[in-house]
Image 1 (cartoon, rainbow, N blue to C red):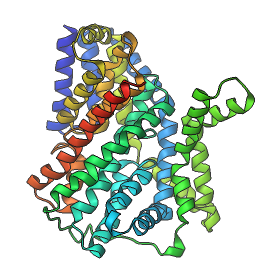
Image 2 (cartoon, rainbow, N blue to C red):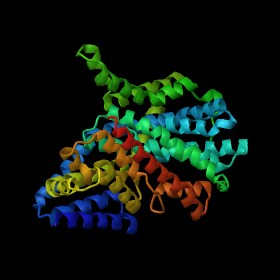
Image 3 (cartoon, one colour):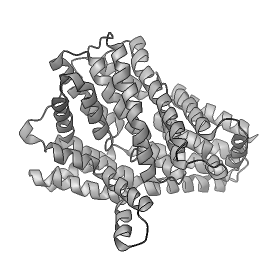
Image 4 (cartoon, rainbow, N blue to C red):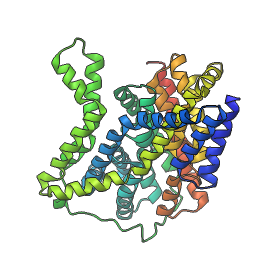
Length: 438
């Protein structure tokens, strides 16, 4: 019976989100009620379980995602993203322009949500393609592959951060392993793949091809832009290194580990950005605070979706479904990492959203972390890889790419969808290889 409930609930989730176009948060709450009722939970317990799931999930994440949105907004508004992109392109030269855009997408993609990074960087890609005469897909796809990988693999992005918290995975290790896997994944899905589709012509619509380019005097230096954008990553990586490779307990070590906590790292990074990208350049504090307020309002729905996924996870645990699934999954012949990736892939194809797919898959395979010997950090990355697989017509990212680049449906499937498929497969390969050594 529990297995039938899970299959039915996931099918119902697909119908509500993809076919009926119902809001994802509303859909999650409905599914929670469905699972609780059919598992025979008392009505009061269902509500308490939903509340507990939302509270436990957002208690840790709301600060990280809120600070992340603030940092991304400051990087965008200050022109730091423009500086990083244009400087890298000029430094790498025409011959290696793809690698410049990959690096730009990676640096800018870490502090920014995918859709924000897309809107900020795509007009710059259009400008670069126009000035160099290179095919637009050839220039743009590597950057988008980089943005996509940071979105699915790396904290402080919503899905990997949430799943890491659910699995009690070390954020620093998840970030380190994610970067190791991300590099070859981006290279294959971006520069290498895009060379095989140079014949596909994109003709962006004029309403999208209207880049707002700030003058050189208006934007911060390359050093300030890069260090500010990557500051949370630097703090978390240093803390993880100190914690795992420096023996002994002393005040300095405790302070470094404290600073490297994702919440504290993001807070410090925002404060640094307020100064380096704002106050030091003569921007009034009132204007900076207005920009920050706007950034937080933009992530409200993301937080609600994550909250809904947390509620579903808690309902599966409290109703006993999670334990039942855990026993079934334990008896499966598939290795846990492949199983997690496969479930995330199925969810991605069904519901479209990478965030929803990853969080739902994490809730399903959560019991595996407790009953099998598997790295929770690699499980996060396996699910992240699966959640990016085969983006198609039910994914907002698919339509953003299609409309901005003005491609036919066929060409979008043969470029964007294939690229995302390569990302998912390369991510799984990287996880399995890394599993040999960790």
